[in-house]
Length: 480
Image (cartoon, rainbow, N blue to C red; front, side, top):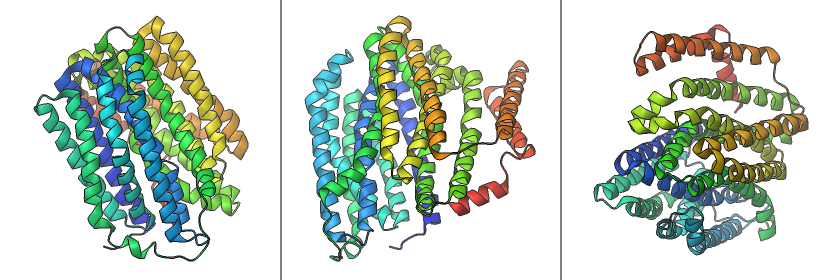
């Protein structure tokens, strides 16, 4: 088993994570089609809470594991023991918390069946925690191809287990068991890939790693990502609690799932690339390089996120009807406000990468805490009045607040700027894209033809106005 370079690692990880996200979207659509909108709404709540708990285990402590296993200041053997002990302990605590509070969560969402599902998924926490720790070890020592192969195996296992469970008419009980079975088999599949690792962590040189140092590094990162995921989780739980018609909750889950697609596929991959490069730039105090990374990051985000908003605003209804079912088109009006909300949250996530690289993770934590409070108040106020549209409005208002924090706090803290002329060009391109899509629709072109025309037009405009060039992408890749 051979190691790979960072560039090879980005390629392997990006490919594997894209396959992982696409498989999750397939599972969403499959469950909605097979079990119906009402059951799909319950699944959305179930998965949102599961993701919230899993991110607690994925973020912060795994980063600390990578840092201190490779830090010559501390004994790698001692760092391995401390990080493994703490990670498994937190996994068990997360499972216990979910098991104990399952009835309260089910009662709050007015869905008694969720108690059983949550308690099944509580078993998943220590299994998933073990798998994610072993997976991070492979990444730490640059076995990127092996870690990517594991992701592909997990994708296949999860799809198989979910499809079999639904085919056997086990419903959401079977889906919950499928997730547990996937985590268990993932741990077993990881074992053959771990053979070279004892040779990487056998050094006893350096000091023992104190738990306090470990927790100080990981604490704010873990807290931030928990608060970040808590925002859509609160929004969805309040929607489940206050919206009387169960099928409407399922429609709302579908809208949220499609609206978050660029964030799921693009932003987490971008964070893998940016964090190391930014950390080195801050350590060397290279303000010009930091400014360059900021401009390129914002440019890439605009390239991906702005046209997707135009697409959802104009074609959201036929897309959701084609992917899910005809009755899901009733939620098309919620696309744009929900998407604007997640656009703001994406800005906050990018902000957190910069603060983490500068060793100031508490700054993004405070911003996320303010957004959670905002979401609690807004969803409690708007959803009882306006139903699912009120839930989307609550997300939009929180997203606007996030964009204000991004502009007033983040850009001021780092002294960053973005050329106004480039912003005008992006606005022009997206207005032109809007016009082309309206014209294609008026001409009676079928959905996929309209999307093809829009894609070709958008790519041509970007290239014509030099918003994206081959040299830009080459420089960004080389710097990262």
